[in-house]
Length: 134
Image (cartoon, rainbow, N blue to C red; front, top):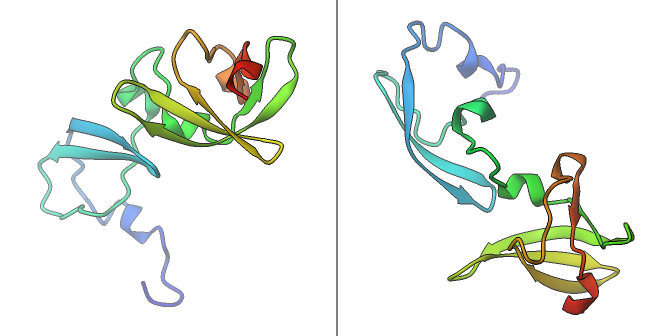
């Protein structure tokens, strides 16, 4: 991009004059979001481009995605703020939340037995037995 060039120019209608339907063939989470293989009939190479897709088109019902949990507050069963989710990683069997709790790193398995995502839209994850992980 040259100085003064509109960074959104590739998104303007003249960039892709005849929008065609596209489907998502595969998707996998990444640390920075998601990587997807888009199948469409375009004569433009979109490799490395950002593509917007409304959540309702790709999200599975009742699924939790990494971008939703990073930065969420952790509260215990009494509602006490216990820290913030700083990272998430996968092990062989489950995901793990990495929580900064007053300067101490606490790792919590992301399974229903330990984690309640019912208030995630508020930016809150409930870990009723938080002290068990200290």
